[in-house]
Image 1 (spheres, rainbow, N blue to C red):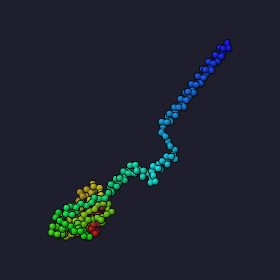
Image 2: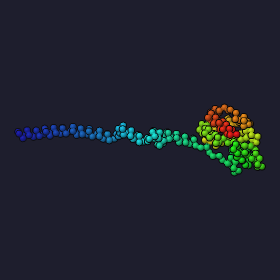
Image 3: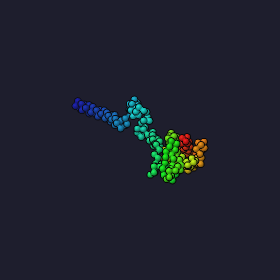
Image 4: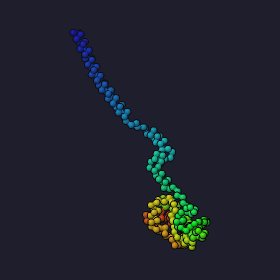
Amino acid sequence: MKKTIVLALVAMFAAGGAMAQQPVQQQEKKEQKPAVQRSMRPVHRDSASMLRSDIQHRGPKGPDSRMHRHGGPHAKHQHCKEQCQQKPAELQYNALGIETTLAKAFPQAKSVKKTDKWTEVLDAKGKVIGYGVYSKPASDGIKGFNGETPVLITLNAKKIITGVYALPNAETPRFMQRVEETGFFNNWNGLTIKKAKKKTVDAVSGATFTSRAVAQSVQAALEKL
């Protein structure tokens, strides 16, 4: 009888231990699951460390320097700006040493002679057949929409203006083309130097900045005479 009671008590304790063990195992599994989830989440730094990292990333010159360094929109704009404001192309010369724009204006030109005021254009016999006046360097600093607009003014032997020509420039090509197509460069043809200095011209619609700059460059060239 006593033996039966002891066996029953042992069985009860064993069953109770098994039942108590099962929730513990489930609880351990529940505790492990968030740990796995946490390991898969991105690590978030505290605000102080983020601020230190951001300052180091930007550098001492602020956010713009970061954008320039890493190719952001500011860097693109800066790159465009540097390209747009590049210096105009150099003047070209033919085999006779005459600047090509001047040579086209005077097909009979065989040589030139430079003076303080202008460039004398000579024929094969050494006779002066006309003059050329370059706006540079007087027009340096005069800019249109995007860059300088230097010009060449040509005059005949009687010092009457025969043409105004655009020289290699840093202006936006489509605006300069617009000015040329409207005949803007012909505004000074047939005028004496004195009358040309007093000449006022209207800007070209659709190329206002360019046409105004051209007119100012012409005026700067005439002021040298």
